[in-house]
Image (tube, rainbow, N blue to C red):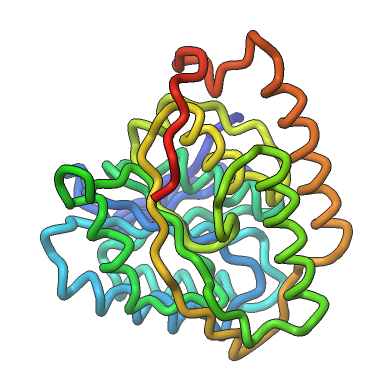
Length: 282
């Protein structure tokens, strides 16, 4: 990817405009955890997400956290809202896409820009309860058998979903578990990954399959994966952009990756060795 960008700070502004702009008020010290939040048409939800997240961060200064928000060419006022938000929250960095590039590209841009020892993905739609963040961080700081390199949130109840959305989610999880012989309970909710893992793998998918791909490659490399229960709250504003086309694209990526993984030459990434002994999900 071409990472040419403008860096906009409170003291300077570069004249050239590329597809990617980067706004930062962060210090240079390495954070323990980076929070990555892709945003598309979430002008009413993202202010509350950032407010709640920063309240949690105020209670946990030991995390030395950074927040990377990727604004993906929204058609509403998300950009305007976020430009104001970064002035209030010093931990927040803003990446602006001049045109919509999709959820996958937004998440990848956030991951590539992050500096944390761990990276946590959070949605911008308020469906995830931000107060649960400490329960995702706890396994990362634990020692011994309780330690985890990857933490997956699991929506044990999805009462806010319409019936067809609920069944699509269940079918998708069943499909991936059957295909990859795993026992993951939720592939597409808030997650945390270690920097060590992210540095070893290549993210190849161009769809929603990006989250399952990271999980599967973590599994293949022998990283410890833990699941934590999470509350699904449903949207307060707006509607999900998920549709059948997006779902089929993710399924197609999943099938292609499955056949690639069957190859004896398969490696999860250019810096990784061939598959290690597989570990169980705890």
